[in-house]
Figure 1: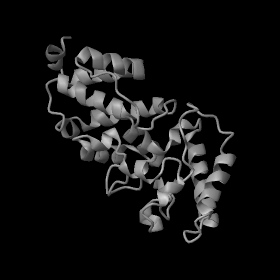
Figure 2: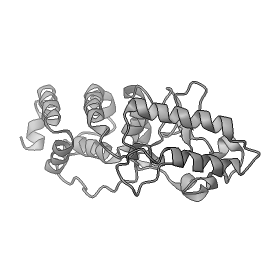
Figure 3: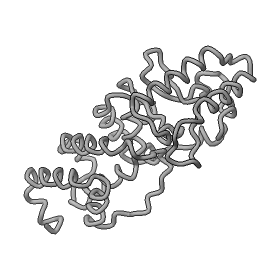
Figure 4: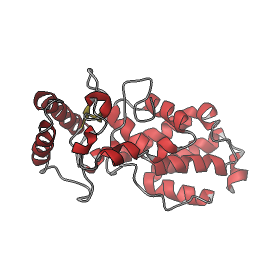
Length: 243
């Protein structure tokens, strides 16, 4: 198991399949995923290869009316629910389900891209710790996907603690409540983002000022409210940060 499909909890991530490029609410995302899953099970036969492209074409046609945040980002219709409880999302034509190592060639990107790609958060040294935190925070796979794919924000959090001369691993234990609060704030702004985990981080966050400028642009006044509470609990941090 991995950040994509955690060992514990009933959540998983499907952001890299283009889910958040669609302008939908959380409820609408769930409805769409359920529609895809139901139609897939009713029409696709793993022994009948032409049933795969037929499903893809039908779903692409049915979903063509959904407004997109970026016309260049593809939304794979093979992303659906992959467990009996309809909580975990994933690739419905992954080899683990089809038994065919190249079954993802029926998708737009193809097997080589789908299987070779690892998202930035998953590749990070703290991936396991982030996974545990996101499982704790997320109430469903939509929220978990938002959190897991938001690797620039996650990197900024790591840099914030690093610039405070704190061990970034320790933050998951000593400042877990503060982290939970910060990411819950982030979820309030996540719906307007098109997270795919492909995003490029152009800011190296070389200073604490760079990090705070980013948080201010992403969270607005909520960031300064969070930071005020942080400084109340860590009064000596002002000397380190220059405040």
